[in-house]
Length: 487
Image 1 (cartoon, rainbow, N blue to C red):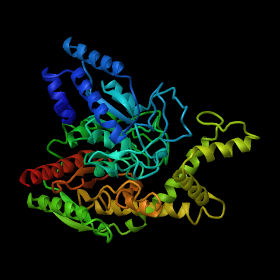
Image 2 (image 1 turned 90 degrees about the vertical axis):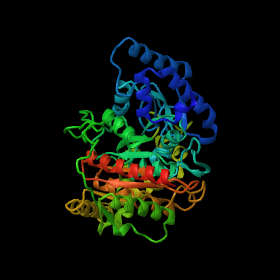
Image 3 (image 1 turned 60 degrees about the vertical axis):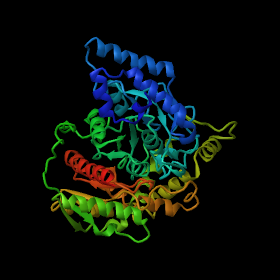
Image 4 (image 1 turned 180 degrees about the horizontal axis):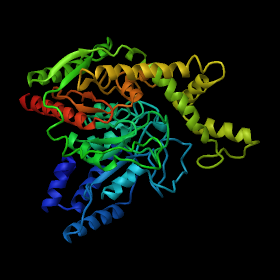
């Protein structure tokens, strides 16, 4: 039954409904694959007890046999990034600081997975507090790319992307603040979707940058991403930024797409020197195939995109400085031993508990918010963010979607960028604009030559236009499949 681990969620659900396999079969295959590959990949920080996982699967099987309703996820295993709270399960955020923390509540997105009969198989690794682009910043161990164990899985949702790519789970949840779903999906050769800001509740997601964070799916196919988005999307009164608006059925409404002939804009500013030629070639092949299929492909300008990385790291770090101030050893998590005073306890708790990258961003954000500097840094970054948003508004007056790379390079080698933070930050150059603008964006694997590293094509759509986004993503997926079949 090991072949079950390499099938999409949609195919597994079809076989479950047809009675060809059982949830227990799928769970046994999943547990076997994790046992076989986890030591090499390092995707998980914690996992459920195997007997409990099999019992949960058997319960779904019994309801299906008895003709009782079964949720949309039908008993499939799901991985959850370890910055999403699950009641009674340790949430570490990949940090030494939160080691003992066990939340008394469950994140809304995770609860909706459970309500849809998804079975949470475990918590996946991430860069500490979701700050990083390689999952090397986790204080609890590195995650390696299943396609090449000498390379990174991307970040910060590297554990979720690696778990899906390695066949350990068919579905996973990640979070995306500046590309943390899309970039690891690109590096690992899977699909990663960041919804419109506010489309999915952030309740129970440990905050990094509250105006940018968003929960989304990492899956093997675009249809699987639509399936999981159907489950987790929707208004949540416990999240003040959650949008109270209509949620389409992404599996049915986007089957034909809301436009037959796509007008595709390709940002000219993203044709930057220094990127890997394989990334540009994968994008060109995809765009040429779409043009041959009758879609309109033209260049578009996003003139303020050159400021996106600087804007993002100012705003995200400022919000991180505020959000992470709560980790001081007084209420939960790590506490320094035998402090001489309250100030000593707070200083040592944070100094011992946070890793270098988290400290770097806290210091940058604190400086940007400090008296005498806020106007020149934080407030100016907010104004530039508005200009970046306006660029997208203007572009979507002419184009249905935009397409461009996810990152300038395929997965780089472990350790290659850890001593060069600026080089690591520049890996986000193509992904942070969508977060700054609050737009939905998806990474879809492009066709690459046999043996080559995976490369993702990024599709961006207007706010709340996930139907259109998924329709365009399916076309990219079909192009990649045709190119692979044709060699």
